Image (cartoon, rainbow, N blue to C red; front, side):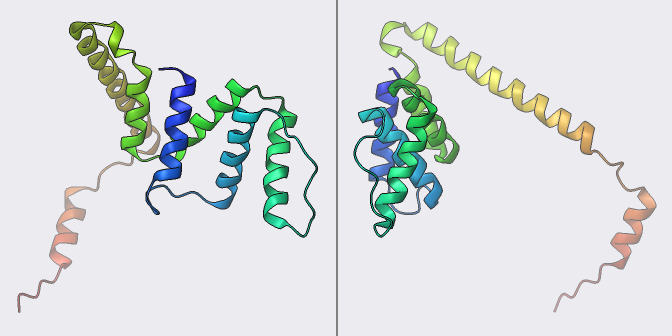
Length: 159
């Protein structure tokens, strides 16, 4: 599947998800609105709404700011998808990942190899991140006498 299908999936997910499934603040809503308009209609059109119409004005200004960046429709779709990945729950991200696989054109053996390589890549990346975190943040464990002092100072009430 291409950008268009992933974009349509993201839009549908946001529009049909139950409240609380995806936490979107007002700034993110404006960003999604502006990117959606840019991806579907292109550059901003029409006259800027009056200051009295606050919501319409914010929407117009958000769309205008995206238009001024010079994003093409495809770039806007791509940015919409990347913003969606930032806030989406794990199951929605997994669906996007599987959408990117063109599973109809590869055989079962290749599908398995691709999935294993993805798992290995994720595992290796995660392991490397954990190791680097521990190198930077590691602190020597407390000595046995400290542990003994801690365990002796704990008072347990059974009743």
